Structure formats: structure tokens, C-alpha cells
Image 1 (cartoon, one colour):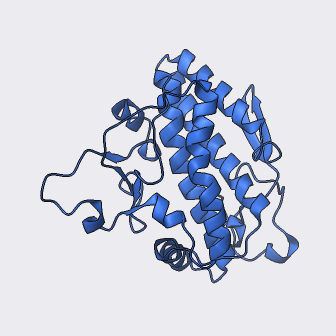
Image 2: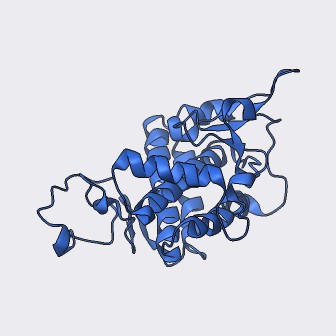
Length: 254
């Protein structure tokens, strides 16, 4: 199941497989269980998450912490949604990706940033695919939402907009991949699953998904335009750059 999903693209792939007897485990390679990344102590975010924010701030050359926080959240949301959505659409099964069994390396990029060393299991509860997908996604996104806001003052509504945008982005990539391979059933299943998630809180008010053609328009902005050289994303709520940003050398989008 992970192998076919990985063929969709790097955001749909992750490192799998156990650790040999005597090996130090994922921690020896800089990986941390996502459950530990999400935990806050005394209202302060965990060091791996703070380190990732520092890295993203430096890479994007921005001194606005909230911009880095927004993009870190969106990047992880895109990874997590993709890992759950592809198997659900392609095989009708949602993998069990609990935060304490999925390891993250904040210094690496997809697909090498996530590692699931344990046995590959699927959800068995009778909640239906949409319910299982929701359970898997929010097991991560709810505590990540809290942890990001502990790391930096950033709008909670903006972050849920990022989660919706990430989910819609995963759908677009997967939908196109399925259609080009004659997997209309999987493309339709993915669309139905994402539509169901976007109709329920906390994503219900985050944006609008249309299916003919497939497109998403969010109701918030991820702040990418505030990155030097950045611009408006294709699904942004803004139709043009704020007046203060015009002529500031921004171009493109992400």
C-alpha cells in the first residue's frame, strides 16, 4: 500500500521499515516522534518544532516568525493529509499513523522527513473512510495547531485555512495522477472524501471546493506574499497584493 501511494509524488511517500536489532533507532538519525513534537511544556513549544521554525525563517529570509509558523504548519499538514488520502482513495483503507508511531526529522525534506518504522497497520474502526481519514488527520493537526500557536502568535483561523489548502492541494495532485492512469474510481473517491472533510468543522468555513473543474479557493491567506520574492498562491483569498506590498519585488506564488 505505501509503495503505490509513493508513486504519486514525494509528499505521498515516507520511509518505512523496522530497525535492525542493535540499531539505535530513528532517534540516532535525528528523527523525533511527532507526538513529542506536538507536546508543549509550560506553554512552550518543543525544541524540534522551534528549530524547524528557525530553519524556515532563515531559508526564506524572513524575520516574521508568524510567516514561518504558518508555512511550517501548512507543509506538515500537506504531508500528513497526503499520506492518509492516497491509500484511502487507491485501496479503500486508511493507514494508522498515530503521532507516537510516526517519526519526523525537522532537518529533512519530503519524502525523507517522515519515517514509520513499525508494522504497517490500517484503521479498523467502523467509521467509514471519511471518518477514518478525519481521525488520522486530526490526531496530528489538532495538537500541531496548539503547538504552533504556542511557538508563535498566529491566527488559528489562518492555520485551519492552511490545513484546508493543504488537503485540497493533495487532492489535486492525487486526482490528476489517478485520471492519467485510468483510475477514475480512485479519483472520484478522493474527491468525495475531501469534499466530506471540507463540509465539517474545523475546515467547514476555510474555503470552497468546486469539482468541475477541480479547484479550491480559501478564505484566508497563508502569508507567503510576505516572504522576500513571494507572492499570492493560486487559492489565496486575496485577489491582489496588499497596497503596502506592491512594487516590493514580489513575484510568483506558492
